[in-house]
Image (tube, one colour):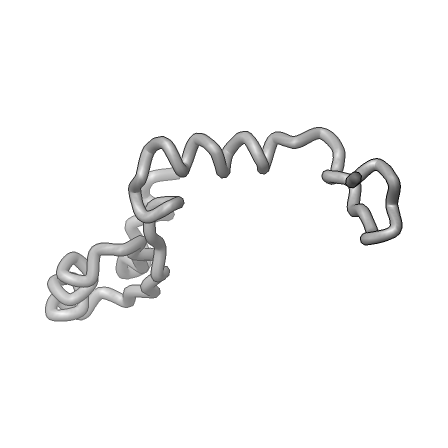
Length: 71
């Protein structure tokens, strides 16, 4: 399988490191850039809270102003 991979020039997906992509392009490598940033700007505590929201098994019920459970 490796010889098949090496038949074509490399193509790279670059995630977040613009300098890395620029160096590859300077060498003639096809690069697709993805603008990725760490969740919550790298704030570990906030990222953990967001992860808990993503793991929520059921949607949070919506209430209306007339809903007695909100009083």
